[in-house]
Length: 419
Length: 85
Image (cartoon, rainbow over all chains, first blue to last red; front, side, top):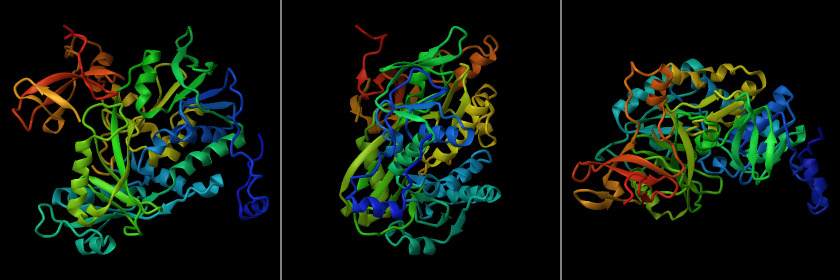
């Protein structure tokens, strides 16, 4: 293990005097070895967090994270950075409460500024069945220490001045809101880089431009390693953290999983002056947005119909989301839209995540993260526990593959913000 | 945007259709297969990186159901293995 260079005001001064030419590299690029104790496929949020907790909590440092593209270039770069715990199920809420708490402590823990901005989410409610459903969720969240509270229509409009649509003559007038004060946004790159730097300092390795082509099983059926574009890497334990391509990869080991791959899209406006200081979620209209620190409106909507491996936005999905947004925020029609993107995510039959050792001994999957950005720290913590000890962590016992065998689903509709 | 060929209306905009899901294998007799096979039939759909056979409903048009093959990488409507020639 080598020392992590500490980022501080003193180090900023010291390197500033040298015109910032003396900063050491945040992580190494070591040569690829031909075997490790654990290989994690995917240097996205879940893969990096898993490597971090394997090293930190379980002392496993002979590990490699292999990544087809570049570090933090997966779905951790294709989401809307919304961190929250307002879920619906007894199984889900404690997991996300833990994840929110780990995110809040992350800047200090990793000595890397994740630009965490705890800014509250407000659900804008436009019909009574939705309000009753949210009130019911509030009672469940109360049990597990998540925050959810009803506010009046007048209070909603006071806290979101740009919300000028949805008046009494609208087809769906705004009738009130629900406030989730735990919600936050942060900087996705900083999360990836902060984890990578910490993993590296503890002795773990990150190998970019290393594409896994297939999973390799031994004569006894157990996992033996991964075949990559840079050769065979042997490992007795392999964790798959590749989101939408999970089934593509597990099928190379003869394993089918109950997952479908979908494309969820988002788009971003030009930067404007601070206008909205909360995350606004409109489940009845079908969109949500927040204003980034740069001033852009980061807007998310519904997924494409059908399975998709395309990282693109469909014109009518885009138009539907924009028209829904303009019905409540008519002044936004002046905004120019700058960028759009789509992320592949895989969704299980019951919309809850899957984290388990598969029927292939030694092969672990973390998948089905429908809105997995918020789950990154807790997902890494619990998968690392499972990989290191062979037993599921108590926060994720409900999310194993066994539930499909017994048809014991954890039906979760709190997963997407807009639904 | 896909242009889905409706057998009655001709090629129509994707926005007129509702997605009906991928075509699943033939429903087995629950008493004739093992529990593992049965739960697999219930929970698992084909998730290929490439052509997938699926059902669409022309709900904002003539109301018919139709089956197409679509490439999940490009969303191009392609010829399925069964309907070549």
